[in-house]
Image: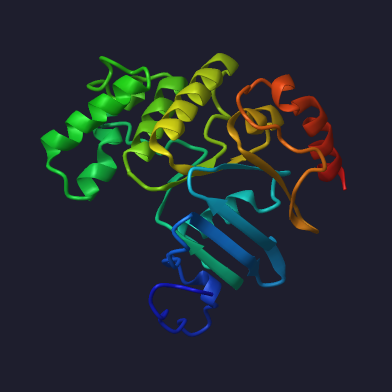
Length: 263
């Protein structure tokens, strides 16, 4: 496994994979993340089958797979939260947006969004100002001072997305971030995310069960299976412009993905 610093020896009775967090090495300039035969095992159980993956700068990669196949584990490896049992990982610093928003219910939307800026040492006033601008851009103008416990589910997801974007990281790791919101809110969040990624040129790895969501957001779609690791569906994802399912070959792609999942 390639890392920036030589890792400390594991504690007695502890495997290297249990030594977390760790810091992946930096990849080549045009590549923001790369996995080479990365595998995660816990005892006799395989949590992540051998995976090879390269994520290029500015690229959105969607990973579709059944529950329990290792999608979240893959994101945790890319984030440096989990070391692979075998194989190599190199990645730029990443921001992880988990399935649950993880917001502090006693704090305001503004202070939740500003958290990564405060952790980075930015003065409170400057961090809050940046957070307000990001919240405004995500459709939460005027709600920065409201406690997140009083926000709707869709509003909370926008705050969580704002917090993720304000990390300034080149690589975003999105773990089914929109699964808990209604269809209309999900469409709005898709549009906001695509607009941000297009403007900032960041890369993202999206984990989802929703093939249509993957087709709409991704430049490249892969299927994670227990036996074969990451698989490219037989039907390619058509290039943008056009994010509607039919416009990007989504109906044929959906069938190809379901076929892979059924193997």
